[in-house]
Length: 412
Image (tube, rainbow, N blue to C red; front, side):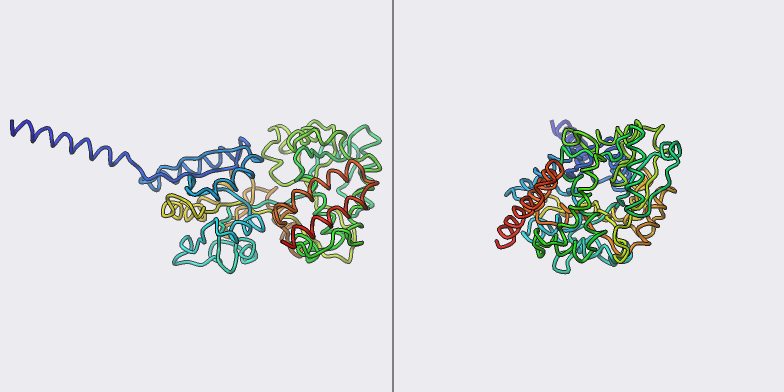
């Protein structure tokens, strides 16, 4: 029986070796990239990672963008972590979790190297908390006023540079039966985009930073001015009707079909544009309101964090080292026509080059209202913007109410 037993053990050992080879180390990524284009681009990136690092298997769990925002808080605070890496936003949104100790510092990702070898120095502060890095940026994009070239040509419209010119463009479009400004505010962050850019054009970047840090009263006369400009567009009927019933993508279809003329939106609008419209889409810098205020733009930065409760921190670090690399950043940016955060990657196309040039020509950049503001304040703030858009005459009481909220939230 000895020979048989030996044979049996050899077979067992062989099977065990095969199984060990198959049992790859798992890295779980929870992702909000639920639109088809970014979802595919990220999946392709993961394939490259798995070829490069055959010992790892990456599991991607994708969640609808708005659901993800709510779920993330639950995952990070859970006693037992389920994800090793999560997608998120730079700025206050990241700092909020860093402050509570719910995400891990990422010094290991940059071991033997420096932040500056990978990313712009100007991004460092928005990816750090207490001088430690907590966030690996993947891509960023600019916001601009998107329009269809053919529609502008048809009516002889030139890109407006000033507020007056902008109002004239709106009037021309309206006269021709086209809704001048597309917007979908079913989720209120799109309204926050308008609030931000008007505030940046009227009061500048330092004011925006102080406001989102909770240091400016919401009933400040300077802030009221922002709403007075916004109100001109509402009173003249320049905004898409029933916008509260549309998500941002649905708002975009009005632009794609030529039923709306312009859309102040992030570059990701190209992700959802039909192929035949993509090349007809162009954008211009949001017009100047006060010439004495330098030009500032919104450039939200997207990327990744490691939860403090991640089961596989070691694997997560390997994965984020790859994500930071020129190769990975270039592939993702090229697939989506975005700008890679990695400094060695050149813009993937003419459209992205134009966006980069616009941002480089600006005097500074902001993240986004709900990325720079305390999450609780952001929520009441954004709902107030929608309320204002529906009842602009109530602006004073809306701002007074926001001021009470600011005092309550920031005195905690």
